[in-house]
Length: 447
Image (cartoon, rainbow, N blue to C red; front, side):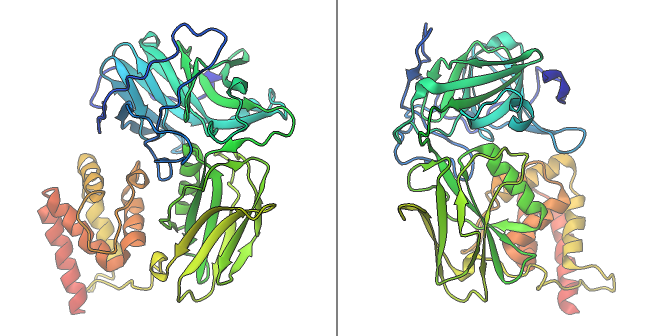
């Protein structure tokens, strides 16, 4: 199986190393563990919109590993994103994009990507097997330098009814699949020592009708192409592969993220129905959703909320259908949602027939590859006017000028997008481009 997936050539040297360095983890793995599973309730999560402080019940990690920011490489079809990082020496590291962790003995280059549970688990799975984390395809050079891999999982260990002895790491190879017992289980990771690399992911063997507590999150997107205020609400396990898949799908359809706290009030449970409510009333379709794990390559289920002429704040909430117990809530204000991004479009002057978007795009296309990377980096920390938020760093990964333009206009509208672009250009010493854009703005104002 592993040979069927594209990986760019491994590079054992290069500039991709670790950034945003935090103290090295000193928490030991389970030494000499054979049949048992070690529980180490001292861990935290550091990546993604909803993965910081993802659980109010599970303790956080006092000594987190070094956070690594990988290079993201596109495959031949433009869809197979591969993460690549060169770890310079022995230590404990965690990926800022995927939460995949590595304990390494020496310098090593690692490549990994999300893979399809549906494609590989179908012929082996039974109804008692529950997917509780992403499936990864991993390569390392040299492989012997990796002492252990920390695989992210969504099981809430502090939520009750979570028998960690039933957790397994599914390992797929060319000859079949094996279920391996993790060396250790931590609040957000299952640890496997001395791995032989291919496809790995965490599952849970569930007996009977036991409810399984799951770290969960709510994502909200506004569909700008739809009428009035149309929201898509996603209630999902707190899994980076699902979050990324939803973001890519929604942005492809010109939707924008609505920034609200994503964490639920405690764990949710697979197979349980949850109801969305809105006050004052709105059109909600469907009103109820059964919580489940849907692999990232499939369309994620969502609830649509339609609010006609939103002129005042509304209260959104999610309750457990059978008990009406509140699980998530947020206040949505009129300023939280976007108006039609095209409504403010105007043409630049000079008889060119170009719109302001055209001039913004021309400016971005004039940046070389390295300059564009610098532009995106600075865009995430430039000082903004009150009331505006930065574009999340993850949304800018692997984006080209057209996609960056869309993000700028969605977040800031046409006029402020121009101002932000000029500020960033000047901050990265691209003053000539900034002045050229400024001249186009002057021409449009004259007309």
